Image (cartoon, rainbow, N blue to C red; front, side):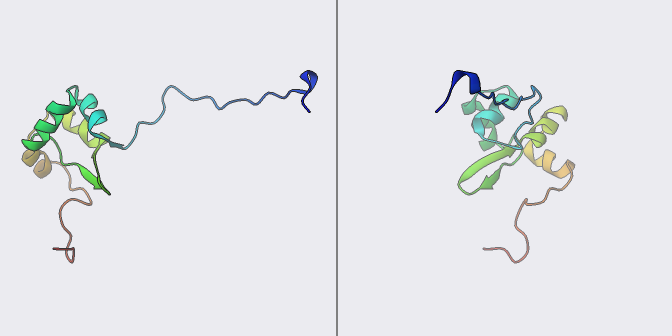
Length: 99
């Protein structure tokens, strides 16, 4: 039985305003980061204008840090971006992979 004089307050955790941003972004969040709409972002992806996404199961996600670096570099086309940026693990097929 609860009484009004015996109530304990539970302090909720304080969320900082500088909460960490997600490492992987879905198409809506990636488009928002780039300042374009979802449809335009997907058109840019189809045209080879933005960095390659990663697949996580059936989801297609973009690395937030990579998109930010791509924007800082002046938004080069995908081919130029991937040849001039440092190699990233997980791109392309590795030897002995499925064919």
